[in-house]
Length: 354
Image (cartoon, rainbow, N blue to C red; front, side, top):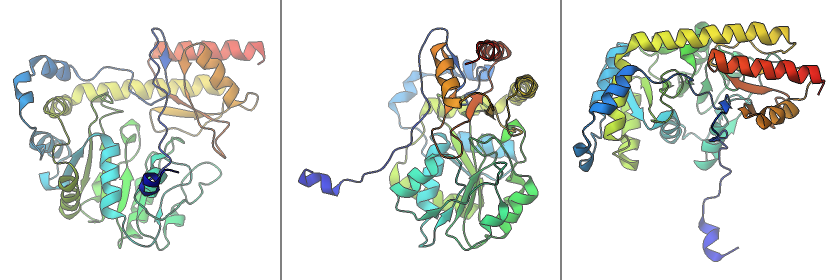
């Protein structure tokens, strides 16, 4: 080892899903929305004046914060925005998880959590899921330095009812509890109704999934004013200008078109429910998803073999070579046409007896 390498922080990085760029591919591996952003986003992009790019953006992201506060009927002091929910979550780890006690998050969950914990030197424990992949709420009723979990969980797709989420928050009022709601718009109960009751609760959302803006990188958190103030203190100590002029404009435009947002969500939910019926008839097993993806397995086919066969046909799904889930595939819900192509491949694959 070179002498200077001894002082370098070394981490095992998060591994994102593949981002192939092939002309006729069907991309069902990164939980992106298959539909375009709201029409207002296109209009805002067309009307955007590039002259403003010579100026720094508003560090407080006032216009976007005000739009989100109005949409969720909260005060602007309860809203924090960042460059995708990953940025918001990383800031939250740095801000809130500084106890000597371990934080808690599920053993099978968003794989960025242990990366942040290790990068920031945060002790953590990972309670196992139940045999049906559900979070066991009682596992979070123990002494800890903070709690974070996705609802719905990823990659399992399952959600906790609001009453159980509240039990976890209620049992942990001496630490910060973060509920990561990246997929909540697809059918799960949001914890937002609890934020005025519990000042230690932070709810994190993203524009990447339900709002079709993964390429724009917009995330936000809603919580008590004191939590948001602490988050902003860390943000301004790290990078004041985190969101570009264009990002702010397009984010506001997305929020303002609620009718299109809800129409798109209903289309994805409808396709997801149909997919459950089709895949069940083929013998696939999966939890009852409340997200924009399914977590599937088949008793007669190895998930890795199926993953590789799909990839050969330019159909991309997500495979995790991890204990307990290495025979499952995570399949994003695409358009009806994309899903029909996916089903047809599965029917052919089964007939060949691979």
